[in-house]
Image (cartoon, rainbow, N blue to C red; front, side, top):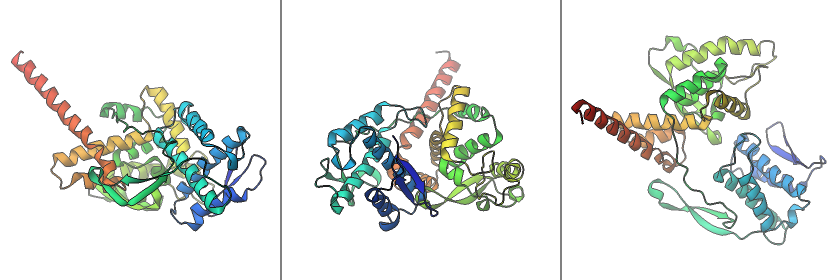
Length: 361
C-alpha cells in the first residue's frame, strides 16, 4: 500500500490514501506547514515534507496500524527499516541525517495532532535541546528544538573523501551527452547544488557571454529555501552553456507552446528533475568506475575554492566561501578547513620525497 501525493496549482501538497480518500487531519498538517505557519515559502521543501510524511503514513497502512495508535516501537521499527534497506531512488542506504529529518517530520505531526486533540498522548518522549550555532560550536539560546531523542540516530560527522581533479575530469568526460557533461561542469566549477542547476533560469544568464572581457561573471540564482545568492561563473563555461541553449535546448523545446524557464531540459523539452539527474550520475558511476555524485562535486568545488582563497591571502576566506555556497551557518563551511590543511600537508610530503630523491637518500 502507498499514499499518493498531489500538488495544487500553487505547488502546495495534499495527500490521498491508497483508496484515494481525503484525510482531514493529515492534510491539515500539510496546510499548516505550507500555508498557515509560513515557516518556509519553498515549494521544494513542501514537496520534501509531503513525500516524507506520506512514506510514514504508507508504512502505517502496510502494518495495518492507524496512525493515531502507533507506539514508539512502531516508529523505531520504521526507522530501522530506513537505516537497513537501500533507497529505491539511489540504491544506497539513507544517511543518518536524512533518517533523522524524516523522524523530525513525524515528530512535528504528532505534536500538531496532540495540540489539536486528535491523540491523547505522544507516542514518544520529547526533550528540549539547544542546537549549536555559529563558529566553534557556540550555543545560541534562541535556537531550540523539541526532538524525540530516543528515536534519533547518532550522527557522526561524515569524513569527506574528495577525489583528485583528474578523476573528476575523467568522470565528467564519461557522460554520454553534452547536456549531462555541462551540468556536471556547472556543479563543479560554481559549487551549485543539483536542484539549483535544474532550476537555473535562462533569463539569469548574460545575453552574449562571448562579448564579456572578464574571466568570471556574477550570476544571481535562487538557492535553497528560495533564498537569492550570487554565484561566480567562469565566462568560458557561460559560453558553453549559451551554445547549448541556442542549439540542443532549442531543438528540444521547438514546437512547445511555451518554452520552459530553465536552461537544462529533457528530451521532450520539459525541465529536468533532480531525481533524473541522480539517475544519470548513477549510470555514469557504473560506466566510469568512479563513485561521484552531484553533491560531491559541490564539496570538491568548496575545498578547491577555499584552498585558493587561502593561498592568495584573501581576507576571511571562510566567510567568502560561506556566502558563495549559500550556507546558513559558517560551521557548515568550516568542515572544509581540515581538508585544505590535509592538501597542503600532502604537497609538503610530496616535495620532501622529491628533495630526498634529488639528494639520493
